Image 1 (cartoon, rainbow, N blue to C red):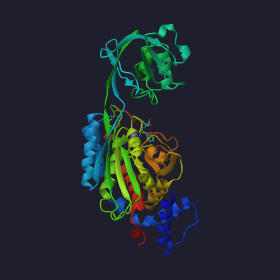
Image 2: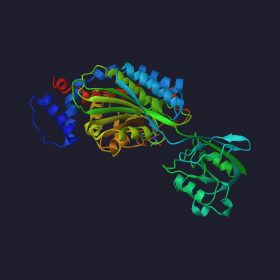
Image 3: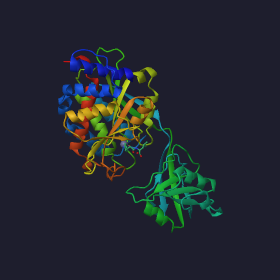
Image 4: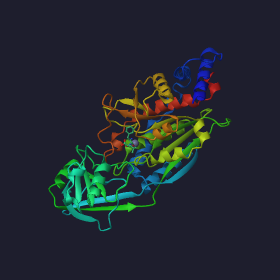
Length: 445
Ligand code: BES
Ligand code: ZN
């Protein structure tokens, strides 16, 4: 990392003074000076080219024409093929990296002939084909003391809170319960999806909405049917723009995830970030760069950053050493009025290279909407864990740092996309990337 920051520091010295003076400043100052010194070079160039209508069309195709893009499904594969074809038009060297994912589950919960919306927990056991029909048992919060002999062979209905989902499910399994339904403790538009934090259970586990769980407490029995889809795969789509004439160049990653949660068209989460990645690939087609840019859209983010973890795990040590920065775009197009601040989430909250460059980019194009925040929950995390400066761009409500109310619901649609917000995020990220990769001799001119 040090070496790369020094390179930037040197170019700043050239820009500002015409002579090279080795700097004894701190590295953060070097980055700041460097990006301040060069922003005027790129000012406008990239920002003017960003076409929000093209980005919008990409979101339309992914979220409306294709629809929900659940990890491992045909819709996810179709999306990957679409993204690859778009990347090819931008003269990138495109490849698709396939990897296996944990068995996917689909399920139903039926009570007195009525189907209730329920979500299988990832890591849950499936049921037999005819399903599990059993009496219901009110197991409170699912503490060990909440289970008596009575719980044996029944479906435990457990309220969310106090314990982890896995602890609740495990306590039920240990008590001899045949299945678990966890209900939310807050109202929600969609059923709760219990996350077993990478663990598995020997009994089926699903989540439901608060009101459905409360109603279940007055019912006698229910039928749970969970079907497992084994041997599924997902894929990352990788488009590389080589640095012409540079041997072993530094590498800059511009990334997003293109999968969605079940039933969500995922217009904002995250066709929006994907549309910006594709647009940045298009508008950097002919730029003179001395760094390699890898435009990558990941699959399987929504089941726990599986695509990006796989990608980073396959990088060689040499590639990691050459890796300078990861700009990740996840949820950059919401029209939710309250989400007026563009947050730069760094996994440790630090003012890293991405923050410095983005801050200067925002200033240079006159859009002072940025705020630094500590935040993970997206594909920048594996890059950070490999020692690469990384950050996620995301619009949120200032102060509360809330996301739009329709996040992860069927209402995450194209109607809730703002071209203006897309454009601002794209222009800032694009300008920052440009400042980082532009050929040094050009910067000095
Ligand atoms: N885009 C979302 C959420 C998000 C929220 C990203 C705040 C960045 C900041 C992302 O796709 C998501 O839903 N992430 C999961 C965690 C992930 C590890 C499965 C989440 O936040 O629940
Ligand atoms: Zn997302």
